[in-house]
Image (cartoon, rainbow, N blue to C red; front, side, top):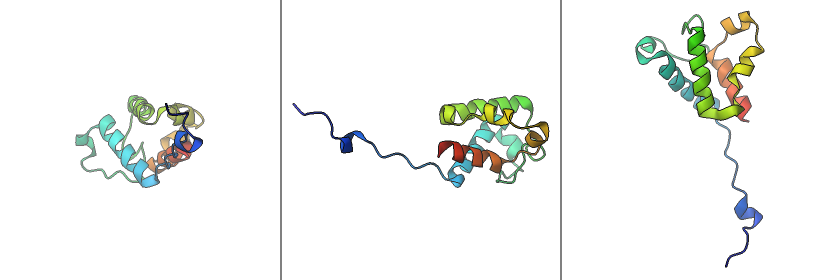
Length: 108
């Protein structure tokens, strides 16, 4: 009968946090789910893409994005709490790059 696993066997290597490029790709995918392919046909989602001016996200779409982020990343990425710390002007000026940075930082 084998004994308990050694600490080397028991400790699985920690997964490296995702890169900004990986998170950007995931955020693009989530936004396609939230907004729809048809709307995004003429829009390239990059780090400087704004949620308000470029994507024209409405509040209900922010809620849907928040739900998808929770499903994808769990409670480590608390989008609602992060946005709650912002004033209205910051929310209006929010870019995809700021969200990507927040996710990468939260997962690090």
